[in-house]
Image 1 (cartoon, one colour):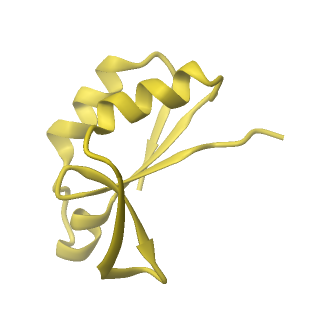
Image 2 (spheres, rainbow, N blue to C red):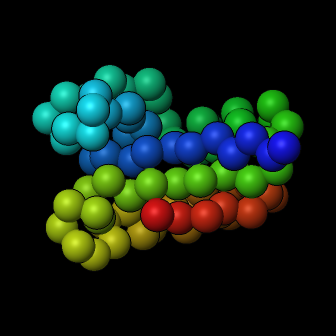
Image 3 (cartoon, rainbow, N blue to C red):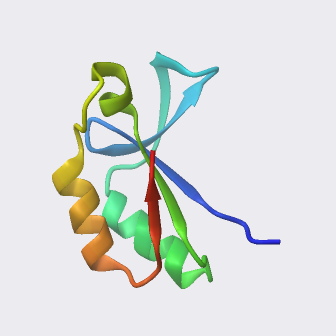
Length: 80
């Protein structure tokens, strides 16, 4: 079994939504790059990144931030 940690991005921060509601979030990191490095250091074999703002507006919103994440770690990233 492979466990794939996820980073959900909203307004440049790592968040967790309550029941998928954009107006009900818990911020668990202000620094997505640090969080990606954290998961890699813990042995993650890949990372799942969700662009929540992009999902709402229907086009990529965090494209440059996601590119920064890909350049800061060595494991594959899947984006949704």
